[in-house]
Length: 231
Image 1 (cartoon, rainbow, N blue to C red):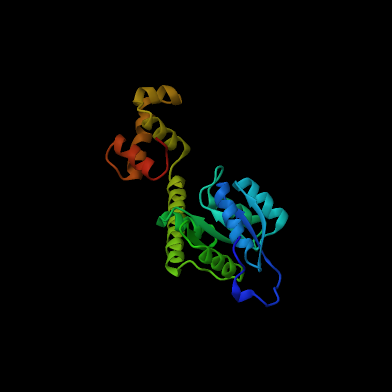
Image 2: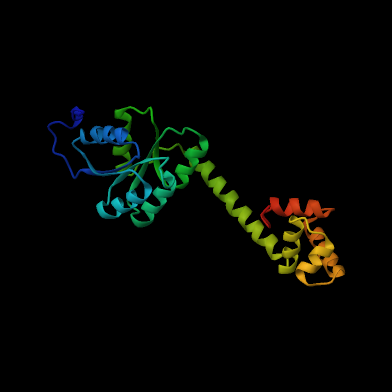
């Protein structure tokens, strides 16, 4: 058991910060609980080993801070964080992960994390991050937020572009694209769709023109890249 922080000795303690630990490794979960319980201003409200149980615990115990692992057996940490915050928006999320990749950091930012600690963080760094997160501080560098926002804008733009592209194609033309992707020739497509071969060729020409390509194969590749069809 860690000794209480000397900075708090002899001082009246305000309402304790309730911390939910979400960690599927029992030994690490116990170690984190001991570190936090060694601080007079913290109270561990619960320990969960999965995203599902974390959501249930957060709904029942209303923690101030969730100390969240990035990898969980049922969902990712960011997915669990989003579920928790959809029900309990006041909870600050502090990630504690072995994954130091930029992708993981950006996923955490997208999920509303206020801090991101690696597994080699010291006990002092963990308690400091949890304490500051409970006070509303955001400990993730601003440039990470900027990258996350740019990436989010990119996703929205691509989705909008795909929707606009889809709107340019008739249902029959999309049928033709999917049949081209299956490798069917004009006769086979005619039989499958119950239309004349010359009508099939007419639709194929329109598809090629709209995708601004020069062949059926290029049409299939372009459509797949732009999310119109799946290969």
